[in-house]
Amino acid sequence: MTLLVILAGISTGILLGLLGSGGSIVTIPALVYLLGVHPKSAIALSLGIVSITATISAINHFRAGNVNLKVAAIFGLCGMLGTYAGTKLGILMPVVLQLGLFALVMYAAAYRMLKPKRRFAAVGSDVVRSAPEIALHAEGLPAHLGYVALLGLAVGLLTGMVGVGGGFLIIPALVLLSGIPMKQAVGTSLAIVAVNSGTGFTGYLGVVPVDYALMGTFTAVAIAGSFVGAKISHHISPDNLKRGFGIFLVIVATYILIKSVIF
Image 1 (spheres, rainbow, N blue to C red):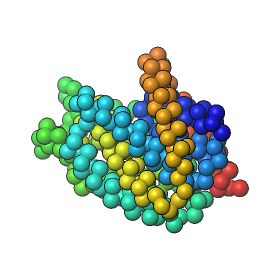
Image 2: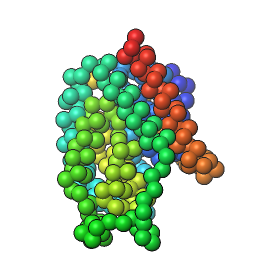
Image 3: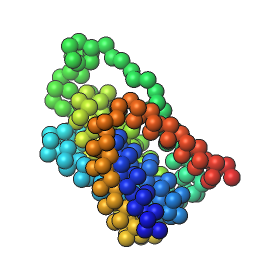
Image 4: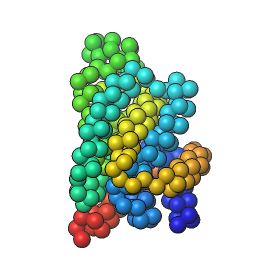
């Protein structure tokens, strides 16, 4: 078991280091299918693991000036409310429904990874926007606060129900709705994921069993693996990484549906 924990944790960490996101999408299948953890406990464990790893990464990004606190506060507060509600739904949902929904989320993430990049018309280095939007972006505030709030609630619900951090949804939303640079979007997303996942983990406490020893070991190994992945990432094309991870997600999501939903 210890060897499996180390292998699963380091594999998760390497993927996190390579891609900078997708922690829970890898962690939950590893816990359920490699380590035999009950799905609801795996969701709770994943939320705890992702909260810790995302917090460490977010702190590093904050020190580098890559976290927009205003945007993180708006998105994060709505995300916490959604996550709290999502945990209550997740506790009541049948396991087969949770795993089926989780597989659909994996397919959505794979689509994000595999679809061709969109090109935007730009003036200089900035995307063409209306004057009010540019003024709001210059102040570091979202141009569409309502959309940001709604997306925060939606991502939070998803986090609570199936244990995904939602980074693959948050990052493009921050870039498109808030107009912040990609580096800030990644750092801000990690801060939001850390808060959402921590809220979700707290919501499951006392309701489902949590193996703290497994959680601690998995987290420590994943963090170590993330440094290895970060080193490797400098030698691999980002496009090839995304394509490979997208294919990996399709395979694993299909396995989950066949194993848990269809049969």
